[in-house]
Amino acid sequence: TITGRFLQNFNLRGFGKIIKVTNKAYEPEEVTNGTLFSPGADASYSFSSRTARRDINPDWGVLLRSHFEEGKDITGVDMKGSIFVADSRLFLPGFIRHHSFYHQFAYERQRDEQYRYTSYLLRPRGTKNIFMDESRKYSGNYLFPMFYPDWHASRWVYLKRVSMNLFYDDM
Image 1 (tube, helix red, strand yellow):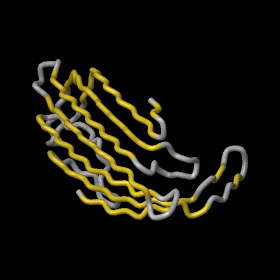
Image 2 (cartoon, helix red, strand yellow; image 1 turned 135 degrees about the horizontal axis):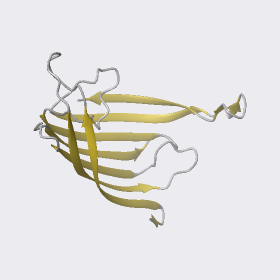
Image 3 (cartoon, one colour; image 1 turned 180 degrees about the vertical axis):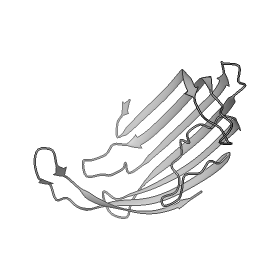
């Protein structure tokens, strides 16, 4: 919805999916196959200022997201697991026009009982993706445009903007 200078959005979604698990074992000689029924829910809310074409992010804004999913075995193997994710992002204006501060605070918890869900959190840049039962993340970014070449090589290759991101990640 548009409310003057700000944009506001709320989404709520429920879902159910079937996950086929094959050769998912901790020991090489042990093979665990099964099928999970995994119902869940997503919710998101955003409130942000409108952006100009040159803005990388909105000057002011909040984005809140959550995801919950719990899988239960439907083939008699007694396989199950669950995941809960809460993610918040805060957008603030930078020092100069079209610059942006962007902060992310996130939390993820998985209950691993023979099935691990794919993580919804991006790990800190430059680190390996490892499984964690519980993780917290903070990411601070300062984004700014460096220049606008407005250059194209053909109708398939077009370079509009070159920007820089200074960041700090912690998990």
